[in-house]
Length: 350
Image (cartoon, rainbow, N blue to C red):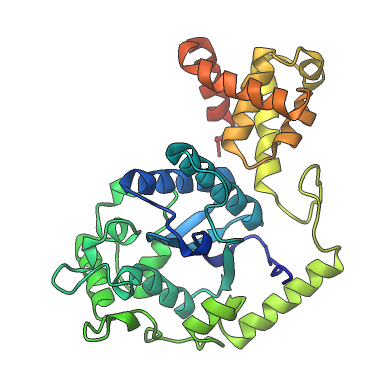
């Protein structure tokens, strides 16, 4: 079966879902759950994603996320690969964790966003994990806890403003209680498996039902939204379809990974008082070179081949070993920790 074409553009919003291979577990205990959340946060930092809602179940996850830049595939590829490696390492496993490619559908803002916000937060109810006597807040592995909890405890990668706005609630103590109350009204405890499947009241008629969109569709929104996305797809295909990820310079597409990677190297060279050409001529193990390589790998989704070619660090295995060594030695080298922090501070300036 041919792969579904990804429509990517700055500001796109997606419902993303992936299941375990053969519907097997993707988490075995709370430590795995914490690893998933930590990896999700790192992926958002690298790719610039804004997550509006998430839920982690035993054998699958759901995300409602926004991509300020057109890089869904690269960011999600890093997330799933990184999480798989970490889980396999922890449990001494090998092979695939997820059952093929993640599924992503485009989401129209407004009522469709609201529908999926509730759909995600009510997933534990439909799965029979949460019961009436416990309350929706009993399930701790979703963004609902952050929505109804103290704002200061929310992770930076979770964006709640749109969620509160579309529901018509303020991000105050009273508004958060109202947010939870509105969600509770969407549950008929005599039929918990139907929780969140209907559309909330409001304007906007999606062209597909939630189930149809999530199971077989590529978008969730109105007919007008569908037509806009088809026109965008046609323009992308006419412009040449897929592009090479490494070394691409097209001014018409903003790429978070390569832009941030170049910024790290440029700022780093200025602070280290060395030109990129001088750095490329230096030894593969030069600490300045390995410092920048480790920074690019930890702060972006750029591939190892791009890093080794840009900094002239030999073959893949050599580059990988030197980056790993730099990461391991960092806690013992205060001077390099300070230099690394200085570079990060300057590239993160508005």
